[in-house]
Image 1 (cartoon, helix red, strand yellow):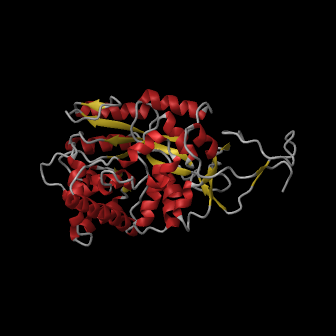
Image 2 (image 1 turned 180 degrees about the horizontal axis):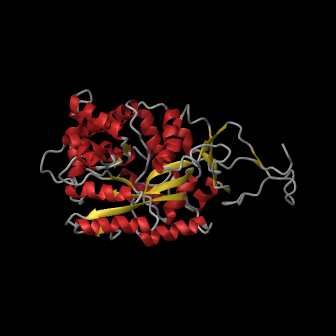
Length: 412
């Protein structure tokens, strides 16, 4: 090995392309956790312009630890149930179209349509977005179904519950409320995956090239956890988390009787089966979080494996497959000449044990090197693994034959 090259001890470790979180709502604390979790790219699907652009600028200039961002602009319809946090609310179709144009001018790459968008707006919004070069994704507006959204021009459906509502909601039911969760929990268990309705829907997704971002982890505790039980999604890492977060891990989203709980659990098992059927059919799947960065993405991979998708294929979805959806597969998703220097070094072999992705010892983002153990300690999180041994170039003063100095970020 040339003396002017740094050497990382990769014994017993696997080098992965930088992971991609396909369902993010970025903010500073979250952004640092992304890097610590091996995530070097994140798709933000709903935020405020000021905060998101400021964070992106600081991360690009090295003033804040965070992933590369692919921005999708949020658009919501005006209603008593509207999500107003980002202010991107439209009372008319013309106002909604103006938001599409504004997002395009500000350099966004997609639009996310939300629950209170009027169903008749979907097609003109999708048409305008595509004319502006923006990808169209989102929730399914109330009083319509996922099939209608696909026919109107959606290119991706967020969340497994939004997809399942296509089969379990009744005409006239308002899914802008908690009903979009409860209805799935109560009825999805009865969905016939071999029946013509489901099979026809899967064919439509495949034929139209429509992707799905299931965020299974978001719904796991919602449908599985009973009051007082430790979180199924985060219980396995509870002793690594700050005490304030640990205390929240025994608080279930729903307080229901035993019969209802079992019904919800059966519906969640059906959700896992749906994701496996979509993958078997060749529908594009992308893993995302919509919750605690890093930890949630790792759990999402575990759930996909639990559903029956091989670990190696899950990692393909998590890297090159997601890069293709973003249109960045010419520079991301591979460790190869000509690609961005984005990588995550993990202890173990995640193709054999997907949970190895939690043990990230080193991360490289666009050539900058980070040690997750140091980031976690600064954030009050107990590290999962220490950094690898390094041999720095001999030309570095004092480095030859000496232990490498650890740094949260090292240019390179």
